[in-house]
Image (tube, rainbow, N blue to C red; front, side, top):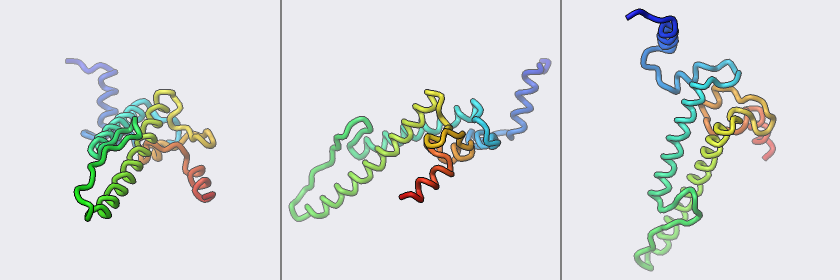
Length: 153
C-alpha cells in the first residue's frame, strides 16, 4: 500500500515522540510556554477525569459523596471506645473534607476546559506554562501569582 503524505506525517510525528510514549510524555513535549495544543489538552482532560473518578470512589468508600454534605460513618460499638471512635470519626471527616476540596479543584479545571479558559491564570490572566499544567492539571494560578499569594498569607 502506498504511503500518503498525511500518513507519512503521522508516522514522522509518532517517531519524533518515540514509540510507546505515554500520554503524559506527549503532553510534556509542548513546553514552549504558548497555548497548549489539543492533544496535550485532551491528555490533561483524561488525567483530570481519572482523578475525579478516583476521588469519587474514595469518597464513597468513606460513606460520603462530592455532591452532598452528608457523611455516613459507622457508629461506635461501645462506650469504653468512645474516645477512640471520636478520634477515628474526626480523622475520617478531615480526609473527606480534603477529598471534597480536591474534587472541587478537579471539577473546576474540567469546567475551565469546557469553557475554553483552561490554562489562563485566574489572577493575572496570563497563560500558565504547559509544563505547570502537566505537573498540576487542576492549577488555577501561574507560578508568579501562586508565589505572591503564598507570601501574603
